[in-house]
Figure 1 (tube, rainbow, N blue to C red):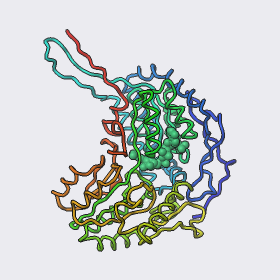
Figure 2 (cartoon, rainbow, N blue to C red; figure 1 turned 30 degrees about the vertical axis):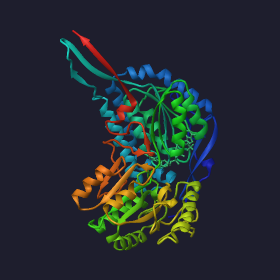
Figure 3 (cartoon, helix red, strand yellow; figure 1 turned 120 degrees about the horizontal axis):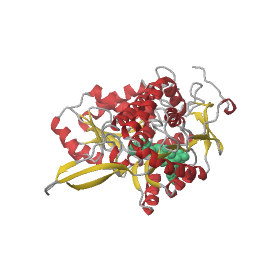
Figure 4 (cartoon, protein in one colour; figure 1 turned 60 degrees about the horizontal axis):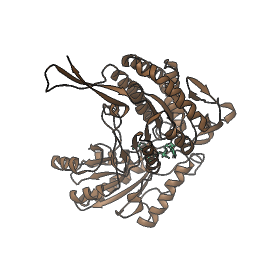
Length: 490
Ligand code: NAP
């Protein structure tokens, strides 16, 4: 495919959205295609700190009107925004591939999920369950109802630039909160499209505010802003920890979804072909840049050599390139920083585990020269003490580890500070239940990839991966609303 070059001058400027108006106050921020750095995908506006302050004031002013609106009416606005996104489905997905690098089919999957999330929570407007229980006392009626918590700050990463903003925005809004969204600076276009859809759907001014800019400057301003009552964050452990410290000083409600080092256990009785496919999918699709990606595959000794041969044979067939081209399996790393981080870990891996059995290099031939492409990389005989077995890499790098048996595999899998997702490949039902009960992770899959969750159930991890109530599904309402408990004598 011919690579387009686009100059910043030919791309229109995307403003921030504050109090129902688009604002271009601030320096331009160019977003480039990681598969072809000649192409400017969008020019955004790097807001000064005052943008957060204005957004917080607007959100506070909008709160009584929005929280006072019947929840089904709020739902109607979310339904309408979902319809607007649906009408632009292919265009928004193509933009996502160009800004984040994931393949076009993956981007379509994510935009579909965003639309589904909006419809799911829009419907919640007509449910919004509370509790009614019998009283011990005569002629006393007891029940709860939900109230919003107020102005909520949402800080999101670049790897799911549409779905993560959606799974925070939609439950926050349906519960009657007003919000400020601060997306990742390297990929703000996908969430800008959601805000555009909400604007066109007629969301009242000030209810949603969108502010792009430096994470450290705006992040600090967000947790300091007087009207803010809660922060929901998805990103690295380091920033999450910092935010937690800041937020606790003000007793803000906080929800953190952070890093991971997810294992897949492959037992000797697994279906070899399916296990191979699941591990390749979870380790390398989306360039390994999923928080639920598998980065450690722990293989029972009896099947180690056979599984490794199958894994290498399948991985060799993956095609790396521009995600807009048909047949491409793996796109680029999201930016130069991320690519350099991955290359640094590959160098560490070479010192610790020896040369990788596959990959290990940046791709620089003509087809890949303008992007941040790295070969899918497999290290073998990785031991638990190695850095590549302990730290999140967030790229197409897989550590293969040997386990004596199921118990040893579980011990290795749980030997991590993090615990977001995990997977097991086996046909033994007893092992499945032992794994479900003993695995220290919030998201557990069986005979499926460790990545690939749906929006209808709680999402989140344990240990250092997560803090606070889970996201998505009905549980999302717990973070974004408060109960009022009523005792009524009649
Ligand atoms: P990141 O560097 O932590 O950034 C996440 C967000 O925080 C961005 O919007 C960033 O803004 C902002 N930020 C940076 N410094 C900040 C500060 N001092 N205060 C407040 N906000 C600040 O993470 P990332 O590189 O975008 O994303 C990758 C990480 O996210 C990985 O660790 C991955 O595991 C994790 N992740 C976790 C989940 C999950 O559900 N557990 C899901 C997806 C991703 P700028 O972009 O402007 O720096």
